[in-house]
Length: 212
Image 1 (cartoon, helix red, strand yellow):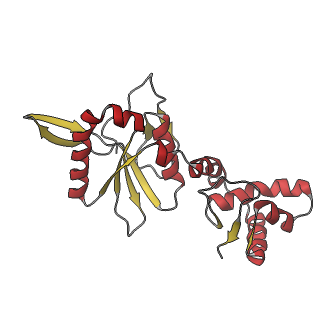
Image 2: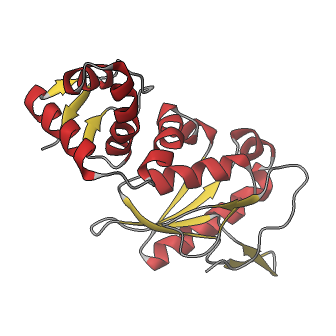
Image 3: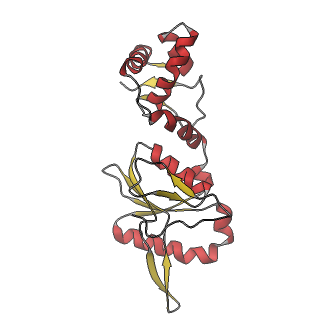
């Protein structure tokens, strides 16, 4: 549950992202935070996440200080939760003197909880994987009939490895029907039932493979 509500901000885009993994409203204060939440929503390794769930306190020069990190990420069993601060690199450099004690307090607090503390910038967030996540999430959230999905999976199992274009052609020679099958193919990729290197731009010629 969020410690504080995200205020309206006329410098950055603010809002709430639709999410099935968020433990509370998935508020964001910038497009960078929104993109980071998109990655968490898409990742098969992330079980849940909580936006601004804790406030860290510490004493500096005799004064009590407070700092609220951006996101706490809960992974599948076996991995420690991670507490994240999301910042543009330019802001990190520009505001480093102010941010440094906050981030050090965040590291110490996370360690006490048995978590890890991380900083995520546009370098880690805005990658081809993010673009694939944005595209595939639309299809991953939709329900599809089992028959077209089964057809695609069976053909891919026989081929072992191909491309989206090659798989659709193997299933159906008719161009119209291939177009109708395409959303089901993106659904299978978006739900990780078909293997692909999503760290590369996804195209109709990308390498895909059977996971069964």
